[in-house]
Image (cartoon, rainbow, N blue to C red):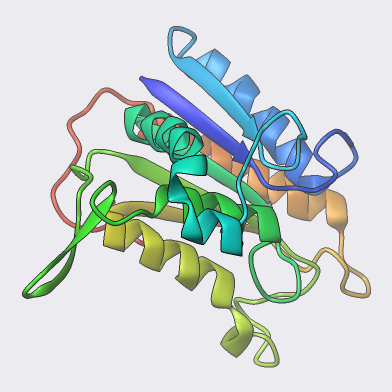
Amino acid sequence: MKVLIINAHPDYNNPARTINKLEKHSIEMINKLAPEDEIEELELYNPKNNIPEISAETLNHPEIVEPIQDKLINQWKRSDLILIMMPLHNFNVVTKLKDYIDNIFIAKKTFKYTAEGSVGLLDGHQKVAYIQSSGSDYEHDLKYVNADFAPNYIRTIMNFMGIIQMKLIRAQGMDLVGSNRSAIVEKAMQEITHYLTDALARDEVPEGSVTK
């Protein structure tokens, strides 16, 4: 199995960051559960990784970025399991993750338009986990539940490309008064462990959508 881990934290080298802790834990668990599997890491904010931005130049001259897009799309397509690790920023995905999605969500490559509407071009075998850290509680706090845009955005993009399996894992409430940050991170690590234990199993992918 090929595993792609996408780190969307701007401070991707800081071991104290929650997302980086969860990424490290994920890699350790994959190596433990499936040491023969291949892991690719993509740090979106690492300057060595060229993630083109939408601009007048790239829109008017798409040939400039097509080779880079094709490389990113091929990496995405060949991955059986994808972990997207992201810190929530102003209720939404960080800019580099949006740039990345704009480079892989391409008509005629990962989806197409038909008379009945858009259709995903991926075969549905891929499993995706979206792992999000946040200062507030977007699952239970009524003040924030309606601002839970980012997971819905990622889920929508996956669906449009033909991916039917997305797991949402949260490390949330990190900045709330009285919160136990270590316990929150530990809970997220446990969820990741349980998810990876199932996701790395060699059983056939079940039919139907899993979008918890």
